[in-house]
Amino acid sequence: MKGLIDTHAHLSMLSRRGIPAEQRLSELFAGGFRGIIDIGTEAGDLSGRIAAFKQFGKIRFTAGIWPSGEAIEERASRAAELEGHIREAPEGYVVAVGECGLDRHWNTAENGADLAGERELLELQLDLARRLSLPVIIHSRDSAKETAEVLARHRDVTAVIHCFSYGYEEAKTFLDLGCFISFAGNATYKSAGSIREALAAVPLDRLLLETDCPYLAPVPHRGKAAEPGMVSETYRLASGLKSADHDYLAEEIGKNVVSLFRIDW
Image (cartoon, rainbow, N blue to C red; front, side, top):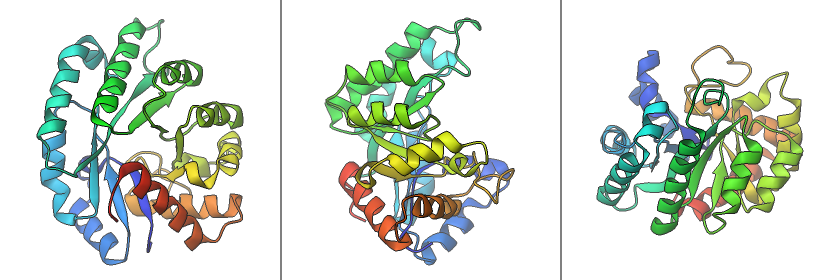
């Protein structure tokens, strides 16, 4: 575990799954784990997350609005609320806007979702990231082309495509837009050949690794709630696909994290 970073975790959700989060985090950091980025999904969840986890020192936070139906409907007021919370946060704690994005698994024309409103919610947060000089964490599910079209209009913001679930061609499109690409535990699944092909192709200087905990626990933990320490399995996979020494890979990803998020780890 020494030197590893989980770049996308939902720590507040661990206790809801019956996992003693504070104990697990204490054990991780005592073992040399380098850091965790805790991800926001609602306009008002930032202060509670900072209060719960700032004690560990090596946790930083993002703040963003995931595209739920209610958030889309109230997008203007929620984006304004989000900005207020970010500006009120202690200096140095918030390192990105997000996660935010487009989801064509849950939000479809067939189920009556407001797709234009969803795109506007994303663009409001991209604009916020630009004004705050922060990177943005992008959720993109079954919406690669549409996501790329939106990001192409916001090239002045550096985006991370989190939990990448597409193939090589989509990865190339996002890389051409200047994005970082982050891979989660689903890359270890037997059916994820196209994701692994993309992982093998992404340059080391654009690569991040994550758990998206408590979701998508990697093999051999699939079926359990994911925890930050399980990111070691995704590091192991990436090391093999890239024929890179494990410690060297961890060092290079650490450089990406420090540079992108301006974290002094």
